Image (cartoon, rainbow, N blue to C red; front, side, top):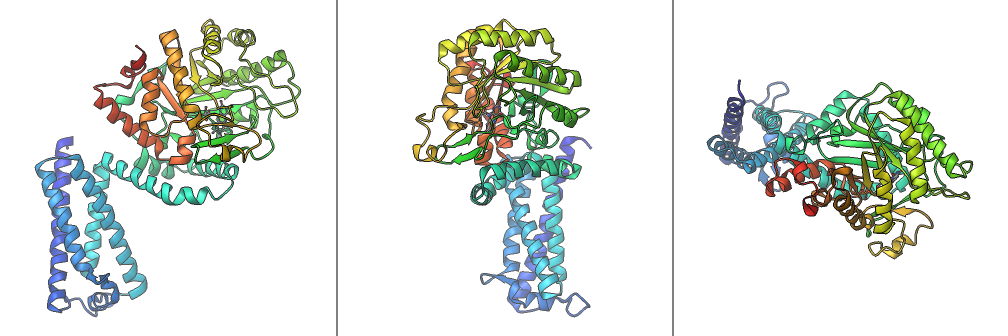
Length: 520
Ligand SMILES: Cc1cc2nc3c(=O)[nH]c(=O)nc-3n(C[C@H](O)[C@H](O)[C@H](O)COP(=O)(O)O)c2cc1C
C-alpha cells in the first residue's frame, strides 16, 4: 500500500471506530435517560446493571455515558475533517483525545474488574474501540505523537519530577540518572520505547562533518557521561552526537564533595568534579567493539594527580591517553582535547592557555598522527586577543575544530545570583553564566578564521532559540548539559523540533545554510 493510501485508510479507520463508539455511547445514554438497563445483566461475570447503577457510572454527577458521547463525537468530527483535509492541528487533537480515551477507559475497566467485580459489555466494547483508535492514531501520526509526548514529559518534569529530584543532593542525582540510563540501555525494548516517543528525524538537520554523519546538531557536552555508560541509550533521546569524559590517563575519584550544586535562580550548576575518571584503560575496555549509532567524542584531559607537576609530564600523560585511544580505533568517534586545568587540590594547576605551552602540546599531538578528528575545548574566561592568539596556534596544527566553551570561572559574573554562589566555596559555573561569552567567542572564531575550524557551540542552551543563536553565529554543532538538567530529558527532541521550525521560517532547507549567517 503506498503512503497516501495508508494515511487515507488510517483516517477512515479512525472515523469508523469513532462512529461505532458514538453509537455505543448514545445507546447507553438513551438507556440511562429512560432509566433502563441494557440486556446483558446477570450472565456470569457480565452484569451491566451492577456497573451502570454503581456510583462509578458518574463522574462529578455526570453520567460516564454522556462523557462518552462528547468524547466520541469530537473524535468523529475531527476524523471526518481529517478525511476531507489533512491538517496538523486535527492530527494533534486526535492524538490528544485518543490518549485521554485510552486513559479513561483503562481506569473504567480497572474499576469494573477490581472494584465492582463485574463488567458491562457496552463499556468493554467502548474500551476496545478507544484502544484501537489510540493504537492507530499513535502509530500513524508519528510527528504529532512525539510532539504530544514531548509536551507531556516536559509538564511532568517541570511540575513533578524536577521538584522531587531537586530535593536530593545534585551529585547523587547525577550518578543515579547515569545509572538509570545505563540500566535502560541494556534493554532493546526500552531503547525502542524511547525512540518511539522522543526520536526526531528530519533531513533538514542532517550534516556530514569531517567524514561523520550527524542526524542533528544537538549533542551532549563533556561532563555528564564520565564513565562511558550512555553511548547506547542517548541516540534514542534524539541526541545527534555525544561526549564521553573528560577522561584521564590515571584514574581519579573526583574532588572532595560537593562536586556539583544547583543554582536555580542563576540557571546554572556549580561544577567541581576535578576530572573524575575511571582512567583511559577502563574506558577503552568499556567502549571497544561498540558500533556507535551517533558520533561519540572522547574528551581527554590531563590526569588530576600531584605527580604531574610540570608541563612536560602533563603532555606525556595526555599523549598516553590519545595513543591508547587511537590504538583501540573506536568506530564513529572523534576526540576533544580539554586544555583546562582540573581544579587540582593542594597541587600545581597546569593549563595550556599560554600560546607557547599550547603549541608544545599540539606539536606532540601532531606527532601521534591520530586517525580521528580533534577538537580543542576552549576556555571562556580569556580576552578576545588572547583567544585569537590561541586560535592562531591551533590553526597551525592538525586540529579540525574548536568548542566554545568551558565553564564560567568568574564567581562575580553578573548572571550569577550571589546568594546562590555563596553556598559553594569552590567550583566553576555552567548554564546561563556561560551563554553570552560562549556566543561572543563563536562569532570571534567564525569572523577571524571562517571555515578553518568546525565550531561546536556550548554554554547556556535551554531551548531551540538558544541553539539557533549559536548556529547563526558560526557553530555547526551545539552541545549542552545544564539545559537538560533544568528542562528535562525531552529537551533535545524539543530543540530539534524547534530548529526545524526556525530554519523553515527563515527559508533554510538545510541547517548548514544557517551556520554563521550573522557573521558572513
Ligand atoms: C556537571 C558538569 C561537569 C562538567 N565536566 C566537564 C568536563 O569534564 N570536561 C569539559 O570539557 N567540560 C565539562 N563541563 C562543561 C560542559 O561540558 C559545558 O562546556 C558547560 O557546562 C556549558 O554547557 P551547559 O551550559 O549546557 O552546561 C562540565 C559541565 C557540567 C555541568
